[in-house]
Image (cartoon, one colour):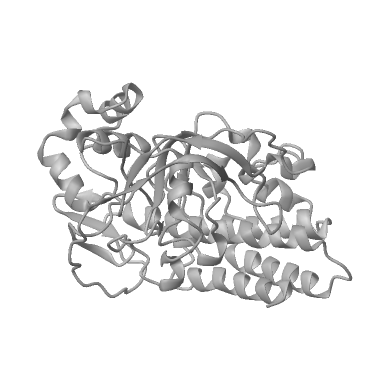
Length: 385
């Protein structure tokens, strides 16, 4: 498939994800971390216009739809994206169509920048799903995004696989697409460890709650316990009295499903309560291998299953702080702000989720969020020494 064919396919997929939504759904911003769907549609288009085409038809769109690129110029503050009513959704869709036309008819395009734009759009496809789940899940009636078939799952036994460790290479190879934070590939020492064959399931979270886990400070990191007290957490996000909200609507909690919407603090506390710990990102990458198989957005379940693969279902928190690899070099110019400037106060997640497009992932992929974040499709897999 050519780059332009992939461009058409990925851009069409974004609109497909928005098809079940009303105009009103796409304008709401329920919290500072979640952006309106309309903003995602416009921002991904601005990214192609700014960084691939290199020329803006309407310079005011840079102020409206620049996310965090200081070198590009000022912008609407992130918490206020939902306060911008104009341009309306119809104009944003027309903007997308016009930039698509310009991409198709451009005399020459930088293939690497176009590839980066495609992966950037796939990141925002995932954000569209996580953010619209927050929009709908926080409404009084908690409406479904759309109908999605559900059957109760048979539990998957938990076991551990031993890994000898040693001096190994991690990170993305020099060839092929990868983000700057995945490179350079380098040698590390990994001590022997064991890694669970599946992530933490709802059954383990239910047992943690029943044992008073959200009321017992000894399981928690200091900042985690302070967050529990401040936010009044008693269960994962979207849980309520034996039910949970997901994109198919409200239903009973299935103990066999992989637990999702856990913060790093919750993942760490449950891991320690289970007599284990979270793996480092080095351990995770060594154990995962390179075969990308699992429950992804392409499978259209849009909710975790039983989690029998190292990839898919949920992004898995690791105990590793998000820091540069030895010899790290950011992308040049304004694109150097894509990853590097966030290397403080964040934890690394690995593996992708049921909201992630399969073609967007690699074993070396490093996702990152603040430890308290839980609106993302995040969970955890436990490890032992």
